[in-house]
Length: 308
Image (cartoon, rainbow, N blue to C red; front, side, top):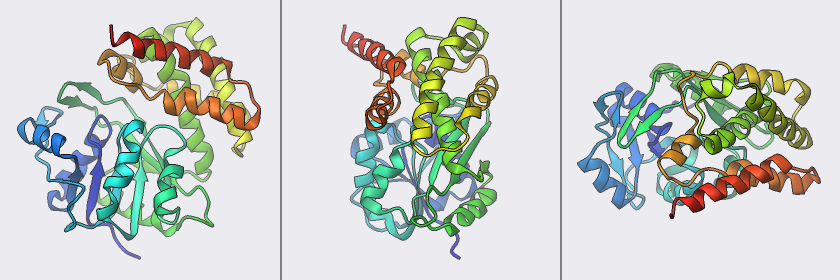
């Protein structure tokens, strides 16, 4: 069984920078950050600052062919996924593991259309939000990568042990749940029900946690996700609400969801992987999604307001 040595990270925003920093500290020579020419120039002139220290990283452009990765981590926003899939091709070998840390429950399916499922586990990030202020990123170190196999007939289960060994060496926190599909949808449930309304209402986690009317509204969104999850084959959906709320109340009160941070910076949000995707799942299974339909409409109004 191979070991991971060389790593490519695509996307060094609020999540990618956390793992770029960890891997860089472990072995800077083994890490490359995949960027386009515009970002290369920008990051070279003004390096990302992570917890007060510049990230002195090694960058590669998509056309380069001299570096092959044992692990590719994709940590872009959803609207950068297709570009990432195209841009990593020169760095992918037959046995390269491709790990997506995007929000949502569809990115691996999209990646697998190009690279197949064999070395594409399903995964997500969980932890306190990294806070971004221009080029400065701060994070308190509380984070985990959750990963596993969606379908053992399609994905090599040996990759899970390979990732475990590497993360332990680097010092990356992780978990590998027994029921990864359920865990995957549980995180999605939390994102759909907290990211979107927080972005609309401008509320921190603490403000949401203390507001009883918000909690009532959030429960209705969670119920909508649970119905879709059950239709998608997720087991024991009836207990997911309590688990989602337990995780929600652990979030740091002063923290802001990534979607709220996007709205405050007038960046395009990830409504496509939350409300839009929920609506499409609803159509697929003939399940009404009224809450996500309203959330989608309100977030699109916010996007339109950026232009004013």
